[in-house]
Image 1 (tube, rainbow, N blue to C red):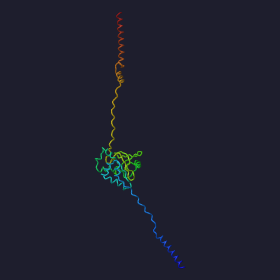
Image 2 (image 1 turned 90 degrees about the vertical axis):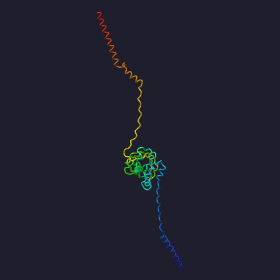
Image 3 (image 1 turned 180 degrees about the vertical axis):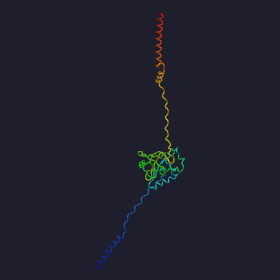
Length: 258
């Protein structure tokens, strides 16, 4: 009997000790590792400019000058983003004087770099930019732009060119692409001799109105001798002279009779 009780108590002690050991030996629970944030979508500027526009001329300059690589890197590998002002093909064809054809390759590259800002700006951000004197472009140095916000319409002055944002091609951070109606020409290349605005067309000469018959008649009457004060006075003198002559002759006849 005593042996049975000892056996039962021993088994109970073994079960309790094994349970305690299992609890202490179990590894602590670990919190799950958070998943990495998804990388932002790659923005392909060539695709955007090919679909919109037509921006074929500007896109051609981007590729020939290798500026596209600079803009792509800024758009996808920096936190600042990029803002690009893109003229339509018609804006380039409208350039007569000055012309880009006389520029060197380096100058053309600077002109294309002049069309972008090294930061993403939404349309509402230009109101703050309008309060600054000038804003630096990718061309750096003296290649700056001036912005004016006129009731939500963004006007841009480059020194030589004055244009405005006509539409937003793409405006999602980190890339903003805005269409403009003129090519931005920097003073740093073209100087400060801004061509004057075209003079207004001359107004046609108006022939004088013909003299009216009443005026002509009035002029004729005024130039007629009979209507002048001098002619009236001459008539009065002749009449007075005739009266005195008759009186003298009558007096002479009376004297002869006597």
